[in-house]
Length: 453
Image (cartoon, rainbow, N blue to C red; front, side, top):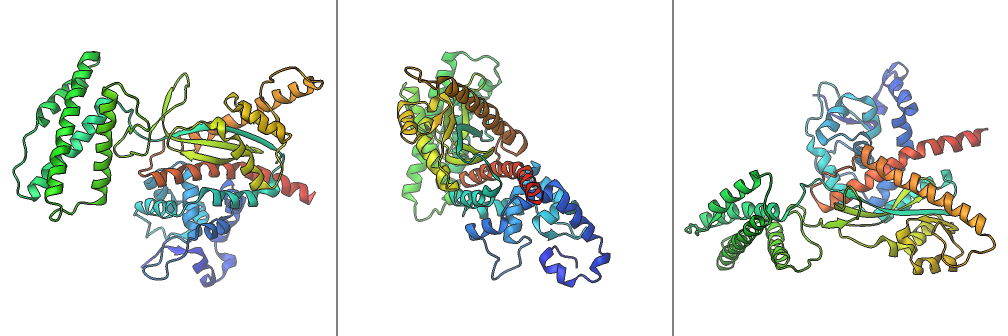
């Protein structure tokens, strides 16, 4: 029976290797962009930093620890879904060489869920700061202008439907009502009466309307809040009374806790009060609205990332699913760059939101020239400083902000389709650093040509 084999296990068994056509694929792979991308990533050092190891017992894994990392980079590079990635891995020898596996054409890999399993395994041990230290050390010999620092924030949106109060309340009710009924059925109790069917018809009629009056929306919102409150009360009563007889899954308790929080938040909003860290999805309760103030998209739903760029290479300084003020994180950005590259920052480019008095004093104290608009009287070197500010601002607005668009359009970060918070963070990490590795190809070529000249 044919099996999927690791290349490292096969090489000692190949006879007459000079006649093996597989060597031609290896040569073409080393010269292709995919081969150059593989060379731009320090897989062994990343694996050692993560602590990934081969299984000591049980069935052998299809992928080595380096192969698992390579599969994650390959997914971000290609933009394929999990099933598409496995289909192409079966038929593309260059993809197999990138991941360190050799798949027989008559015994293809069919379980596309292996990609999700590997993603969850790596997400459970992912440490962004630790891995970025490994990457910066490997890329440092090929980078220039390490004294220039550029920073800005962006949002990588999650793949969720646009949230409204009515949708969120009805999703909570439509999940809780059948769950509550199944609990009563399991305990042989009579199902309690509720107005679920009536509200279901009202919601259906409301959702079909193209235009909805504000008064109608408020009436339906009040009715759904009342029904959700009743369902939660009935569920709490039976869970407390029959706690020993019922053994519910952690997933149920997690979603039930989120629904309880949704009820509290929506009641406060209905009364006209402000709510912090508003839940917008019961499946992804960690996601909150992030007000960006953009013309086309004033509110975004996903992870907000404060990014810093050194010679065109992006590094994650801070990632959060709650809103934060990026302007106060300038000192942390400068400290992180100096820690990664052991080089003092002397030039800094950032958006106007970073140009606070505290940040200006911080930069002046450390002799850092910024691209901020001048305050106060002009100095004797104003013309040179004005030219420097113009160059820094233009470089930041084109190179740094342009890199955000590249990552979102070409490296699977337009709408992140992860299911959990940990895997969503992993998705962002691999998308950002796959784009970095592609940029490193030309930088590495340039340095190698310079050294051989």
